[in-house]
Image (cartoon, rainbow, N blue to C red):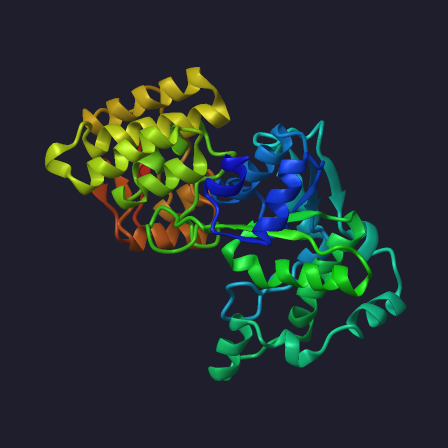
Length: 389
C-alpha cells in the first residue's frame, strides 16, 4: 500500500479517505483515461499506466478509458493555444497501437477497457445540454490555462470549456472510485468529482503524478516536440535515446519509470550530491537505467544487444554491424531521409538539420539540398544509419 500511495505520487485528494478504503480491503474501480491524439504511447504515458498496474497487482479493478470522443475536442491542459481539431479518421489511425502498447504495462486481460464514445457519442443533444446546464462558464474559466490565454488576449474555444465536463462524465459512466492523472490534469480530475456529485455518486479520490521531461531535459515529453522515447521504438533507439538524456533526470526516471528499489535510487542520489565520493560514474548509472527500461519493453536479450551496439558505435566510434542500404544516388539529403522514413516527416528532417543532427560520412550537413553519392553513410540523429546504393 505504501508504494501505491507514495512512490511517484505528487498529490492525493482525499488521502485519508483513500488510505482508509485500502486498509479496509475495499476493491476499488481505478480509472485512467488517455486521448489518442498521437499514434504512439511514450514513456511519459507509462508513469500513470504503471500506477494503474500497481492497483491491478493489489487486486483492484483497472478501468482504462480510451478517449476517442474527447479526442475530437482535444484536452486544453497545458496548452497556450487552441489545439487543432482531429478528424475521426485521424483518431482511428492513432488508436491502432494504443492497446498493444498499453498492454506492455497493464494486464489488459484483467482490465476493463472502455471507449468514451460509448456514452458521449451515443446520446443526443439533449444529453449535452443537460450536462452543460450543471456548470457555469465563470467556474470553467477559473483554470490557469484559460486565465493565461485571456490575459494574453488569446482565444479560448467553447469546445475546450466543455472538455473537462465531458471527461468528468467518464467517471460517472464507469462509477470510478479513484482517478489517476498527471499534475497537468488536476483541473479535469477535480471536475470528475464535481460531475459525480451532480449525478448523485460518491466523489472519486484523485492521485496525480509528476510529468517527466523529455530528452531535452526542459520540456514535457511530447511527440510533437520530438523529445520522446516511444514504446514502439526499436531496442537500439530506446537505449540510445535514454543515454542521451541529461544526467539530472536520472533520479526522476529511475523513480517513475522503473521498479528499481528505493535503496538503490538513494545511492544514486548520494552519488549525484557527492560526485567525488560516487560509487558509480554517471555513465554507468545511465547505462543501467537504459538497459532496465529497454528490458521492460523488449526483453533482456534485446536490451543486452542494444547495450553492446551502443558501446560499439558511441564509445568505440565504430559503425553499426547492420546498416540498411537504400537507393539514393543523386538524391538530396532531404528526399533521401523522407523517402526512406528515416525521420517522421520532412519538417522533422529540417529540424534535425538545423540542430546539426544529420551527417554524411561523419560530416555535419547544413544544406538539405546536398546531393548524395553511392556509398555515402547517412546518419540521422545519434542512432540511425543508412548507406546509399
